[in-house]
Image: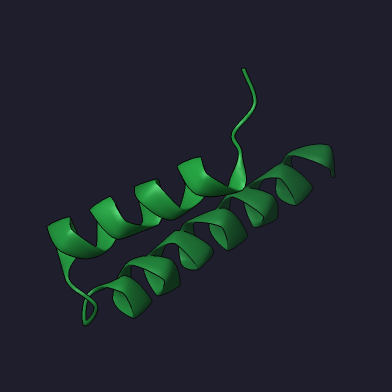
Length: 47
């Protein structure tokens, strides 16, 4: 049930077709901000 390299390439191509190459950096930036906010929230919860 694992993903092979060919599966990952196909998924990447589909994402490029759906979103276009120009939007990918913005999506990654927003995703990174979300992950950072989640981590910061988990740190605040521990204190």
